[in-house]
Image (cartoon, rainbow, N blue to C red; front, side, top):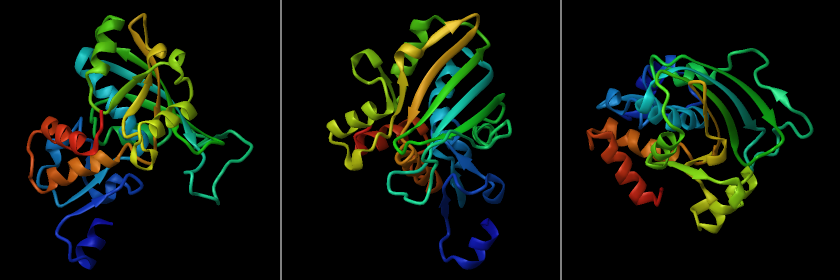
Length: 246
């Protein structure tokens, strides 16, 4: 893929999306995990919507207390809202039926040493993906420490079911009420009630708006490739300010 574009394109730098294979591009980026590793690169792949969602919450947890291993079950939307030839319509589909799914190895392209195994399902919805995470920790933090860490993490929102945000439908309705362009929710929504630390393990659930969570990462990737901002936290801050992201 990379060699093809080198020969056929007049562009000196190319940004690829998560549907492309890491091995074909050579470099992958997530703003929170390996921004600096892509500084000045000519060809970079921004990881997928699911991988972006996993990295957004796993990286601050790893920074807080260290991660031994991650096990995650991904409940994926069957199609985007504008797609009419995808499904399922009346089924729950293991996708893939083998374990692990590709999401864990994809995370490892940007969180290189993370022990992570994922499995995935397709369900009859178009709104969002949903993740269920079980994270074995190096050190056991208090639940309050975890909550404070995630609340302080940009592009992550803690939502509460008991305040009317108990489903992906209600979360997306909230994005509409906020007046977001295209009703996008660039942030990863973590259900606050799902957060629990038990016997050295952290459990939580989150929702990912697959149409928009990667958009700010694309902007950050351009800054890294063009050497416009060396500090990833400053790039994240600039992008968030310009896009109105929390």
